[in-house]
Image (cartoon, rainbow, N blue to C red):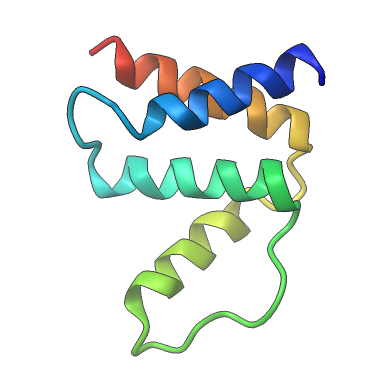
Length: 86
C-alpha cells in the first residue's frame, strides 16, 4: 500500500471523529473528494429534483470530474487535517 493510500485511509477514519461537525458545504466537499478518490468520475444520471440530498451529492462530485484519484486523496487528507486542527 502506498504512503498516500495509508494517509487517505487514516484521514477517512479520523473524519468520523472530528471535534465538531463541519458545515454542509464542507461535508459535500469531503463526500465528493472521497468518491473521486475511491471510484473516479461520477457515473449515472443526476437524481431528480425530489431527491435534494442525492442531487447535491451528485453535483458536488460532478464538479470535480477529471481530478486524478491521487489528487483527490491529497485534497481529502489536507481538508481533514485542517478540520481536525480547528
